[in-house]
Image 1: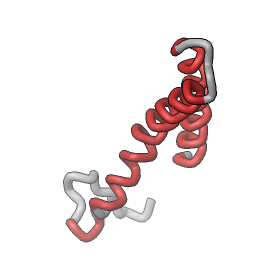
Image 2: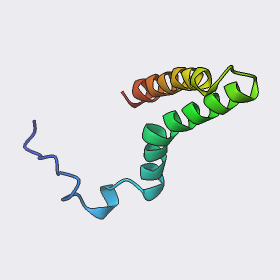
Image 3: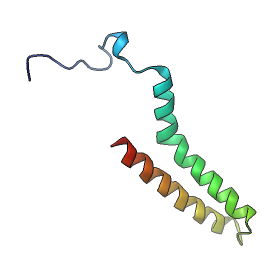
Length: 76
């Protein structure tokens, strides 16, 4: 450490804060992408003839888990 201190996000100058578009993108990646994957896979399974909503939701859970793993690996 060369004597320079890292400023917390609240104390950073405005030029160093992330742009709003980056915050929106991160929000989409972290929360909405897995939920959208769940909804899309569930709807697709229903359309392709799943026996009932529970069966379709199982495919939605698989898609949610895959999207969440992808988001977590990409964030790290």
